[in-house]
Image (tube, rainbow, N blue to C red; front, side, top):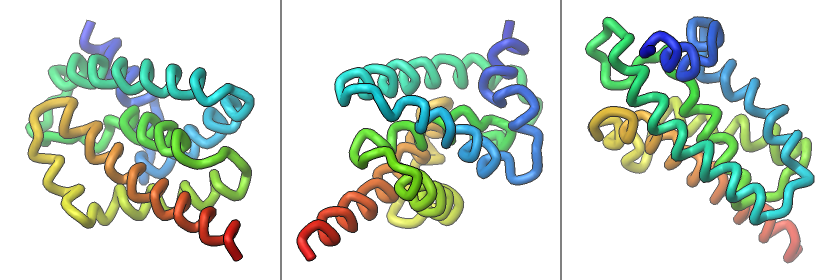
Length: 152
């Protein structure tokens, strides 16, 4: 059964691609665009279900990895969840998706402002929370930028 969860956590072959986190985030972009017409409440519900489900899936998948790494690079469901959750605080437009992609990948790769410390959290919590923080910082920058642009 852990092979099934491993398949879900890696998004099948995507987790084994070069730059798998970036590829997974690219895959998440059309998913976000497809949810553009959802009300805020519905988007929040879908994001919340995806988030909670990802903790469960990733935790069950971890046993299928031979690596003792806390965050196997093949696990990319967390990138999708983080990118989807980013749009809870900013509007979905083609431009916001493109800018969010760049900022999210920056924060997820560089892991500034304590994001790196989240990797020390146990199991799926550490794997997912660092992506949520990357989304928070990326979304915060975009939200502030939108507010400033609207004022001037």
